Image 1 (cartoon, rainbow, N blue to C red):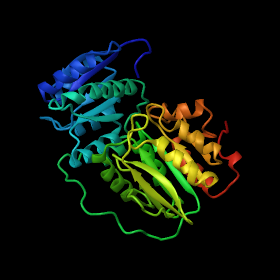
Image 2 (cartoon, rainbow, N blue to C red):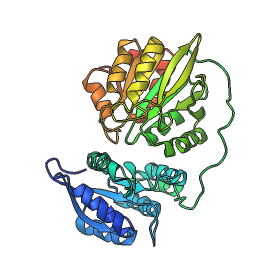
Image 3 (tube, rainbow, N blue to C red):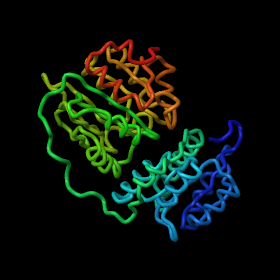
Length: 370
């Protein structure tokens, strides 16, 4: 984590000289950031990390001599530091980037496209924002046993086939809505893996590109007891099922008689995001009210804080991830600051806490109430 008041020292690692040049130019425009060096492969990067001691690393995936995932796996075991992946966003790239996030990378961004000059200012703002957030992120060493499990799969094709058929067709009485951004893919995984197969229906808005959301849903489906989908318009919300917003659509909850239904919308970004957590939370407040639980997890910015407050005002139970276990305590921190979160819970206790709320236990004894 960088020292407040000092420039953020960045090392750029990419085998393309053109990309290194573009990223250097983009980041150097911000007076709070200093590009201290570049590296064309992992071996050069390793030596420059020792010599330059950067605060943040940008890392490509496909590089000569040693691929980015192998390098990241070693780095997070031996010298953990904030890393932002900058790579191509194909379906295969999505799988690899999700692997990188599991290894401890803070965030990711597509490589700059020099053929789309009109969007370059927007790209600059996004890259600079992610670097600044990464500099403040809480980064932990990758456990050796966990590192061994996360073997790089650079050559593995994306998983094929659809998701398994629904395990049950029981309607849901309660709704759990979860919102997250930076660090959220692993936080969501930890929550979902701690919930049983008969948990009430869950809707999730994670800030993630469309190229990633399908792969992310498949990964979550493979590792948890519930059935996980990338949400579809008109899909009924059932107990034991999870619905993840597509990376290019807002996800709404609506009431259709006695049923809850997913609605997708291609409207303008809200808080610069689509899907937006505020959009999901506001719809859950209107449609489910006191039958809902709102959970805001790690993430940069403020998206979701106002929506969580709307949920609380509508009678929902509201929970925020605590600062100590958040990669970036932006979204949950804002929710706490404006009085939107009734409870503040570490991520390793979140599943048990949410389950207790869903089962109607004595809420006041579950966590520190605000």
